[in-house]
Each structure stands twice: as structure tokens, then as C-alpha cells.
Length: 471
Image (cartoon, one colour):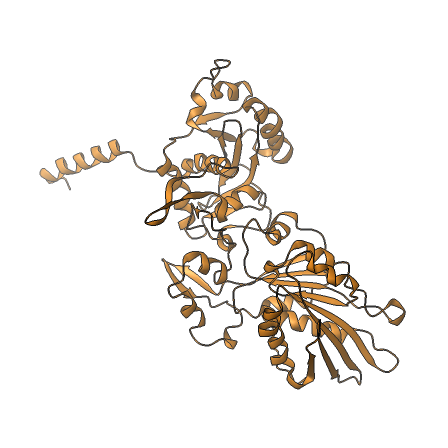
């Protein structure tokens, strides 16, 4: 083959993946479109030849608009196949590749380019029968479009002509927000037959500065300084999504933890608490009790391995129907080696039954104590301190609400003023804030500072000793 395609590490895995639904999220300029094109072409080479030695296939390429198809997607196909592809600008746009292979057979690949900007326009796809499909810049497309294309692929060639071999749908996109359907599919639903790939970030943030990531993909095909120039004058949200390949913020507030990196801090593999090491469960009360399960490993790393979030739930109900059942059924080995650290307000008595939350916890046989403080700054710093320490904070896959909160939903509210957009001093109270409060109560247990009284006494002894030559 005289086309010089250098496979990227991520696509080396994708090209071997037998799953029918393939997703790849990566930075701008990371070679996603080219990798998806060759996923289709390699598939075309794999089809069974007919009696004339021709391997027939039909590949669908979808993007949100026709201008984007013509100016970027189709140009990428032309740059790779040049005189080997003919494009007919009809409706839809049709490409045709006829390519002889070394075994004497010929690839006859039809490429159908269609723009779909909403679910209604996706109806035009219903009459298609294709082998495979590529949703280019899938973040601009609807989930309905993806679901409809699922009904149209692996339909060509017909079964009597050998049928399609390893049909697939591949989707490429830049990082999305936690509210996007692609995030839900990749990070929450994780359905069978769906493979999700994440390319390395193009740059890394080191000591507050952006530096090129030596593991970034497709650098040899980009101009020198491509990403450095892109970051000049760009806001952090743009860089976070398009360069660092982190899930991004929907512009309705500012995330509380600027040091959180989803690539660095989130762990895909399920984390199990170590046996024999104490577990600290942070808990926030009220009508939406929440809990964050944490543990500090011997090397100092704090793992956050599970969470509980509720709505319209009493504290007693939370303990008896949520907290204890999770502990005893999922983590029975921690039953005698955990403590619950609560919102200090838990000590206050209820106006209804004169019982404090702490009394209810004791009645439920929970080893509970009050958090060190409810002041915002030490709570925030307890988490932020571990986020800043390299490799010392890990968030497990069970922590869905905590993760969404870190990425975007635990945020400071915007306040529009004559001077522009300002942000309030405390986070928005929402369904993500309660479990983050719980996490903060737990994290304060891992922050150890010398008391001022101790420091004062030490300093006074040092001064006295120095006066008599003791030091």
C-alpha cells in the first residue's frame, strides 16, 4: 500500500478492537479524523470478495453541517487518498475509492457524506444501508442520531453476497461536559459492546504553566509550537477541553477545584479499601444526607472509593437503609474499622423531636464524631491540598456525583455586575454539593497541623535555651 499512514498508539488498539461501537475522545489536532478514516478503509479491505474479486462496502460519514463536511472532513479524505478517491457533490455527497490489493482483489468502497444537525434531519438516514459509519465531531450530534444509525449499519453487502465483516460505528470528539450524552454513555452507562478510548493530553499543566506532553499523539504532523500558540491568551476552560482533554465545564459557573484533573485523579478500575487500614466516611446530613467513603493508604495516598447520595431522606432512614447496608454487603471487612465524620451541625437538636443528629447516629450504632470545623476555608483546603500533591488523591469509578462535581457541577455561582461576571464566595447548593461537603469533612481527618499552642511553647523554650547557650 503506497499510502503512508503511521498508526497512532490509541488507534493501534482501536484497529484491533472487535466491538461494534467505538468512541475516541482527544485533543484538537490529535489525528482522530485520520484514524477514523483508516478504521473504515481497513474494514473495506477486510470485506469478502465477490466472484470477480471485488470487495464491496459502503461507509457513512456524518457531521452536523455540510460546510463542515466540505471544509474539513472531505478535505481530510482527499488529502489521504488524492487521485484514488472521486467525490460527487450531489445530495448526499458521494465518494468512491477503487483500490487494488496485493492479493489480486480490489477494494470498491463507497463513502456517503451526510450532514445531520438534529433528530428531525436524521430521518433522512432511514433509507440507507451501510457497512459502517463514522460520526465526525460527535459532540455536535444528538444521541438520537447515533441510535438511528445503529439501525442502518451492518446492512451492506447483503447476506446473500457474503454480508458485512466486522461492521462498526466509530465516533470521535473533543472532551465534553458532564451533562453531555457522550459523557453519560462513556462514564456512567458503559453499555456492552461499546469501547471508549481517551487519547493523552496534548499539554500538561506543571507548576501553573502549560508544557508539551511527550506522550501526545500526532505531534509529527503538526507545525512546531502548534499547541503552545493555541494556548496563548486562551482561557483555562478552552485549554482544559481542547488541549488537556479533560471533561469540560458548561459555562454556568466556575468549578470549585481548579487543581482537579480528571485524567490524573480519576481511576477507571474499581478501588477496594485495604484490609486493616481505617476507613473514614464523611457524612453530610439534612434532608439530602450524603456520604463519601475514604481511606488513606500507607504511602499517604487518599482513595475515595464510594459514595451515597439521597434526596428527601431522614437521617435515620439514611443510616438504616443506605449506609449500613452498603457497609455490611459491599465492604464487610471494614465493619469494625471505620468511623463516620459528620457535619458539626449534627450536634444540634431537632425542633421536632428534640434529638440531635449525633444521638440518632449513636442509636444506629455508628461510630461517629463531629468534623473539625464547618468553616469553608479549611474544608476546601483539605481537599485542594491533596489534589495539588502529585498522585496523592484518587477518585474511584463508583463516585459518579463526586466526579461530576469536580469536573463542573460543584461550582461557584455567577453574579453579573457592571464590571462583568463575578463569582460568589461559596459554592452553589445543589445535588452535587452535599456529597462534596461530606468529602470535605472526611478529608480534614487527613490534614495534620501542629497546634498554635504547641508551636508557641516550642518557640518560647528555644528562645530561653538560646539565652543560656543551650542551643
